Amino acid sequence: MLPASIAAAPSGGVSISTGSSPGVTVSLPHGDQLNFSYSYLLVYADIQYSTMFGDFEHTVLFGADLRDVSWHISLKGDTTYFNSSFPLVPTTLRPIGFDDNLTNLTTSRSLSGLNVTPEASLSVQISIDNNVSTSIYAYNNTNSANAANFTNLSVSTLRIDNYITIAKIPLANIIPYNIVLLQSLNATINDSRGNFVGFRANSEDFQQNSFNGFAIGASEAISHSRGLLWWLPNYTSNGQVYPLHFSFLRTEGALYLAFQFHGVSSGTVIVQDPYLSVVNETINGIKIINQQIHMAFEILLHNIELVTTGSVIGVLLVGAAYTSYRSKKF
Image: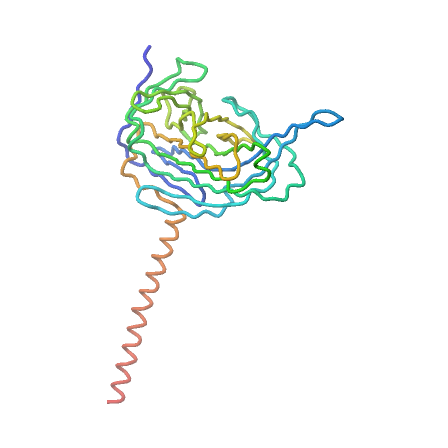
């Protein structure tokens, strides 16, 4: 039996918005919604050492809550830019597993005595991508019969560019650090929480034709997906290509996608680009609205209206006073 073929078709009632921190929300007809937002940037290192009392392992862990970071947001053409530099502080939040399975978040002690605060910067660019692969064939990791062919993706896909820079980190020449970028996944499909089904995919018209990702829908069937979150199985670090490890994490009812990058030191620059495709919709021509900038613009317009109205009233009052003065004097 051939897999279902899913093509994007023009449809009204779609909006795309961003907020005060990196992430994107796609609102679809009938109340469906897809949300992909950034949660944490973690830097850690597992250290193994031996003493006369035995072998020990310790975890050095730093992180930043990306929702609390101060972001510089700008819009240029069809692209929304989020840029920020921030310190990484000791944290006990640690994702474990780093594989394709559901795992949990646990805690870990931080190594004391390190007084140097690491610094990082993150740049996220969100845009509508017209040059992405026109189609992908996606199949479930554990059930190859659960598959679908998604076409015309060039009119229904957002590109999300991640640029991570580690400015400085303690003992970088001695300890091999790793980075974890945690992103929160949420979806409402048919008034219920959406399902996320892992898939592998390939494409005939993309230079690198192998992908990983998650299908987002009301059921486990990939052919019934409302959205696709997918990415190449590698990333670049200082211009070199490395395999990308990821996990699908669950904690306290929340769902996270964790991308892991290995072997980080001071000056490391990491680039990675996931895609978010909206199934059965055309998003070409839709303006991505940043709520924070939009609100500031609305406030500015409102103040201009008040100032303009006040100026007109002021001119009228001055004019009336001057007329009265002239009539009395002359």
